[in-house]
Image 1 (tube, each protein chain N blue to C red):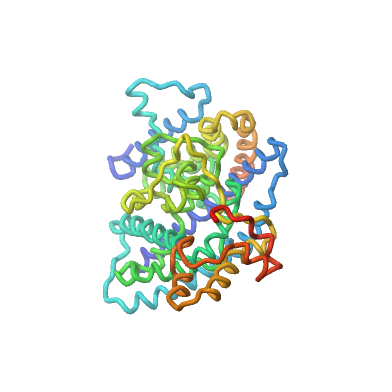
Image 2 (cartoon, rainbow over the protein chains, first blue to last red):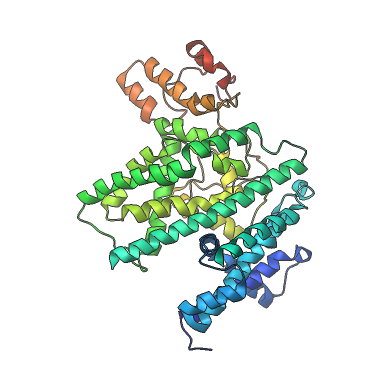
Amino acid sequence: MTAVNAWTIAATAAAFALLASFRLSLPAREGKQPGKILNIVTHPAWLLPFILVMGMAIGLMVKGVLSPWPPEAAQQAARIGGWWGGATGFLVVLIVDGWLLWTGSCVMLRFSTPEQRRKVRLLPVLNFALGALFLSTFYLMSR
Amino acid sequence: MQDAYLDKVVAGVAIYGLGGAVLLTMVLAAETFIRWREGQAPWSKEGLNSLLFFLLFGFTVENVLINAALVAALFVFYGMSPLRVPVTPWTLPLYFIVGEFAFYWFHRVGHQVRLFWADHSIHHSAMTYDFTVNLRFVPFQAIYRLLVWAPLVMLGFHPLILVLFATTAPSFQTFCHTTRLGRFAPWFEWLFVTPCNHAVHHACNEPYIDKNYGGLLMIWDHLFGTYQRLEDDISPVFGITHPLQTAHPIKVLAHEFVALFRDFNAAPTLKQKAGVLFGRPGRTFELPRSCIRDSFPALSNTVSATARE
């Protein structure tokens, strides 16, 4: 563990974003309002930076610069930002992997209109298949 | 120092674009999959047209060639100005906001000046509203981008960074061209372009027509009074007020230019001719759309009995 720096803030924000992703990834939680503190900790607003971070991280994976395997991404990021940088890299890649494999379709299910719901219920299967295809390709590119 | 940072920002935006391409591929796959689940053809004729326009005008053509020409042209204006807004980590948020402002006004001009609407209407001509509409690129938008963005670079904003920010941040709209998603949290709907907000933008019925021009954020719409929320009791009617009756790509591309040319020729005075070019669509001298059938028989089926007339 190293001294607190800007990467500490990034890692903390990424940790909250991971919790927010978890909340959106659990279909069973749909419609259930969590308690006050849990609501703040897992609020989707924590994902706002990912409007930019998601595209950047996937772009880096496409270029083979960033591994889609979180422990490797942590090592790569640690070379730039030390321990906290590594933690940020680990969390960011974990979140991006989650969205590419699962969370994206869960969000679509959650916010789909009632009449659409039945038609999109198999979307997580496609999400997982495509995400796995992309991530395994990125992994090979990063080797 | 400044150039090195500039290079970093440009490389960063290019990387962001690569990531956006992967996400675009995924939403298009989702659209295809859901259409298949609905028992429809995986790609509609409109969707295939959009794909064709993407290959013709989007893809490398706009993203590399046209934007490079746009940046080069903007540099001419930049060179004429003594003002400079440096590109540093501290000014990037300003560039982001100004990029949104640039997108807002270029987009609004594309809707409210008939000459430019002839081009931008191609994007809006789809009667369906799904993820494939993302691909419906138009050929001449760099021209009105240049006109609207030239004053901004003369205020000192670096042309390359301005173009990158103004064209990349709205890529978030990739997820917004769909009716398959309902309303998000109220604060999110207020602040961001969402499927509901952008559905309003693609609607041609009141009170939605010519609203919600934002790229990523809705702030400029709130500020300039063009924000409109999607009302529960008024369904959006997608498309344009003179709906196309054809999927022929050339007719889709030419339909509004033909009407513009016809009205310009028929306008009796110079003032009215200028109005046809630079006035607001629907408020300029205009022959009944049915006249197109006589003037341009080959395009006759591009015009219906007209929604408004």
